[in-house]
Image (cartoon, rainbow, N blue to C red; front, side, top):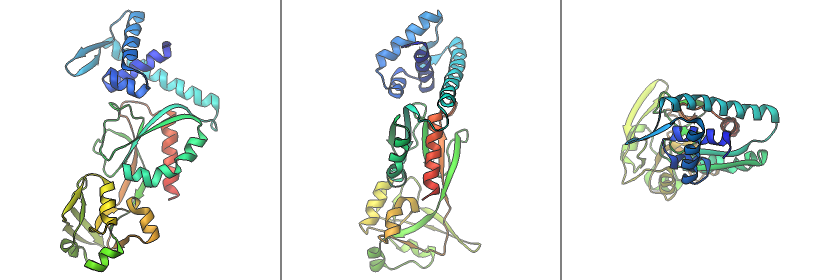
Length: 293
């Protein structure tokens, strides 16, 4: 590796806390990362990292080098973008994570447009309903919904979605349509364990809370979709999750006069790291997609 590549490798090691995680982010083998850091320390004639029970920890000299190197990498990325011009494509590798169902329905169908605009860019998309560690997994940008658990996260809200009570016409025909939120307690609900089963509805200043229950519970949104479309029950879900079926009439909204808390969509960048031009461009792309949905 050349000097700049070695600098980049060191920054990734510090950010992720391990050689293996940094290697996954860069896309090379772990031995190459270890060798690069060793050569960097030999060239600088100073110890940059020490091993501990918690992984790799930068020394005082390592921390100082890390801060300067991180700033230098960011400036180099920005310089490349300025030189290429606003209309030029991006290059390298971008790692994005998003909830599986949301990405499959709302984002991935539009991805070819982004890829065509940036033919020199490779994109890794990690689909996972869980909140994963962006730094440890080498993620440049995450799409997250709802309240952010980390108040220090570098985030930008790019869309607000509607939540609804949703069921198929077949389920409604067999079990009837609830008229007020309290009626939901007598229905079979398909419960998303990540959101819980207690909901507060509002209508013209009136609030009504209800706890839904059912025989099936899922930890991932794909399970919710499959069960609802199989007529197993109703669900409280974002309209994004059932966008095609709401458009076609395959599912229907229940209690349309009652409102549920809105769902925020956030672009989240790794804490402690400047957002790259690639990440910002993808965030803008998602914002455009959502604005047109």
